[in-house]
Length: 539
Ligand code: KIV
Ligand code: ZN
Image 1 (cartoon, rainbow, N blue to C red):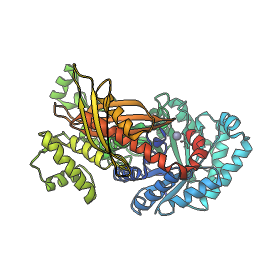
Image 2 (cartoon, helix red, strand yellow):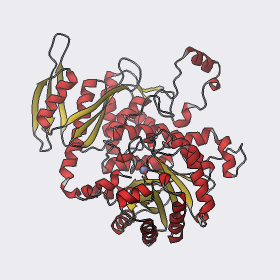
Image 3 (cartoon, rainbow, N blue to C red):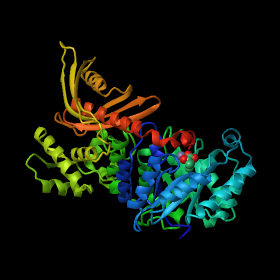
Image 4 (cartoon, protein in one colour):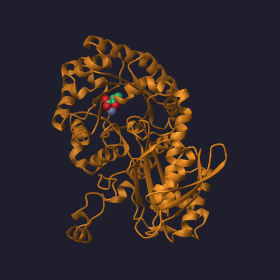
């Protein structure tokens, strides 16, 4: 392996750190769908999960290793605390991957040592060395992270890194776990590591950071200037608390400003050679997929993938763009895979046209998925004259959502208006195959529908977020509903698209309840969850 690559390695942790944010929980099939898309996007490493944390996580890492971790595919990585049982679980889950990596970590800041680990510095040094060597006994590719590096004493950090590299770490990752550092400080930390760790040329320097102060991406770019060559990031920046550094922002900053960054890679400024392996035209699609499956909405003003990222509202800007795009646009929307949203299909479009357009949009569906999506397309095309690329994307993302259909919504009907009490009737098919009907009155039609559904499902929960967005402009647009509900302290999300927003609301709710129900059913076998919950919450 070339230990000092002349480009940036993109390490995606959407399925591990990203999935740790409340409500973003994905099932195994959904993780697999995202992993396949990450491979199409061209990430170098997929951190697929934390195998020891739960049976579900183990299974997801193993399946991703089997199906996405092929010879020509990305490296598949599993997280492990610096303990034997975590490392063994990671090694086992990663076994089917052509390129597997164990990522082991232990905290190095004094505050973590004193209060969390209750260990001395020499003890942590010894554990880091021993556990890296143990991981190395299973795989060649070992990554080591000194957790909370951003608040660790640099002198101690140098020592830990030197010992980890000597024990076999091929990547050393520097996490700003609590999102505390500023770009100048983070850049200096990386420079210090380069200058003071004697064997640093035998490992790749990676960075990992959280966005508590909104500085994660800026910190990473400063780290790149100082020698970091792997960036750990997530799609849409999802993750613990304020999230992680956003992949799309890093990649596009390195692409749009490549003339600025090229010299740090020893290239002439004008070099057109890409700084990452990412196929930028897959960015928008990946963002939508992750948002739909996790229920984590993308804010409209989010850089690169937000709904307004390429919209010009002010008259002065519109005028300028009409005269010459370059007056106010630093990148072409097509670069991230946004089409001009041309109208492509309608109710007379056949199966072949549908299949071909989906192919062009980069969807690789199985025959069953295609059949299901085609039925949905026909339903929508009957109600909506023009079905755009964005509509197709919303429908297909909905159809490939892999939430087990324990409860199935058979019927929803509401009556409401300014002189009526909103009343809803619903029929659900239960997991046992029974059809149950119930009705309820609410403060509004959605409230009435949710109350009626709750009467059937009968699992106490609290709706904590409800949002409806239109997929395209126009009165006949598809409405996308995303909801989040809480059961005890757990959050579950649901998502659905339909031309009728009451139907979409009902489907999104049933979708979230199905996640909750599946989780309740699987709870017994996942007892390890509880044991590692605290540790997971701290990474
Ligand atoms: O934020 C963090 O420190 C982590 C480590 C496990 C890399 O997620
Ligand atoms: Zn993290």
